[in-house]
Length: 145
Image 1 (cartoon, rainbow, N blue to C red):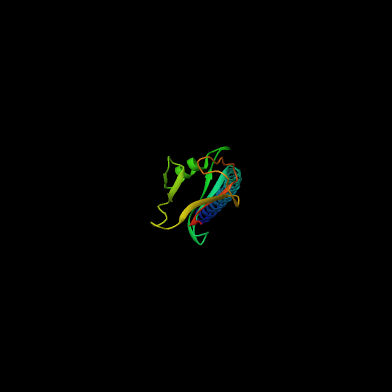
Image 2: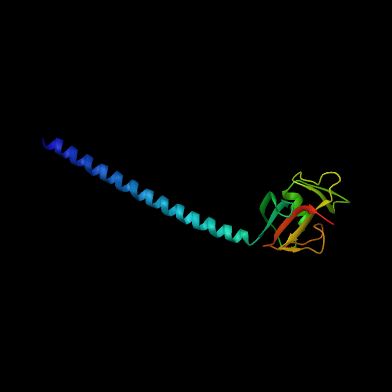
């Protein structure tokens, strides 16, 4: 009888140890996950300081085409960044954009790709515009006069 009681007590003790260790591992895992999430958030915040947001729209923003946050260095040329991250077709020695993401004006339409940076029309073309981290660029295909 004592052997049976000793075995039962031993099993309960071992089960308690296993349950206690398992809970501790779960807590450590959750703590590790929280630390990783905090680290990831901090890295994302740091990266966002070194990125530009490029949005592609049509008809004065009525039709959304694409948007991307892109990591850049100070002084990166907009046209180069655009070509590296989107499907872009140009003419006139690569200075005039005819198509972005395979969206182009139809034949005979008086539409062109225009862009703004931080809400203001740029005074130079995309092939000459130097980006700064944090810039928000919007390319829009719309009618011109």
